[in-house]
Length: 201
View 1 (spheres, rainbow, N blue to C red):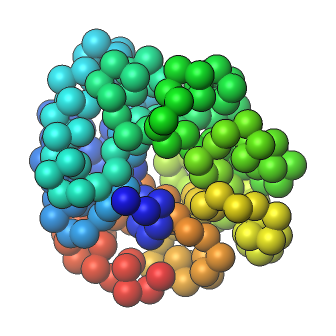
View 2 (view 1 turned 30 degrees about the vertical axis):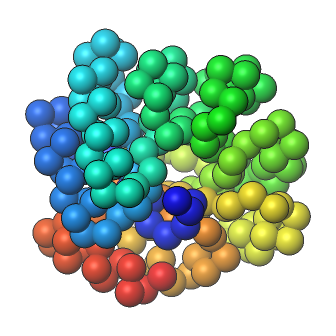
């Protein structure tokens, strides 16, 4: 399984708790191969059953399943990986807990942070926000040329995040992974949104 292409994230607004599994199934049927469970409000124990179900669905479709922030939950259910930010568990500690798993690290607009993350065992790094984002309106902005610089400096995959949709996705040719929330769920059916986005990459 490769860290490449569309990277779809769940979100409380677009994938309500009771619809999590069905929305992920739609994403996978549409051809998404990397999915992240992102839920900022629920407790780990509330998410446990959902996470286990999503993991099984991802396995069935040969997709990578990553959990945002929740290192202990990722370990408990043996998820494919975890994505951590600046306030989350340190990368070194996370790598100790998940020695053989995918670990993604948010690096915002900071190439030096990404170089350090690579040296500490990150599997991929994420830069952004490249465009205004409705799901993270206060996110730090990153310039597009950062992707070109990162491509020269790093050996691990690079993920672009933030406000990405069909009007701007073609500007991200230097990214290996393209992380999207809103634009995979709107403005059409998921299947149609994914088809258009994949054609534009």
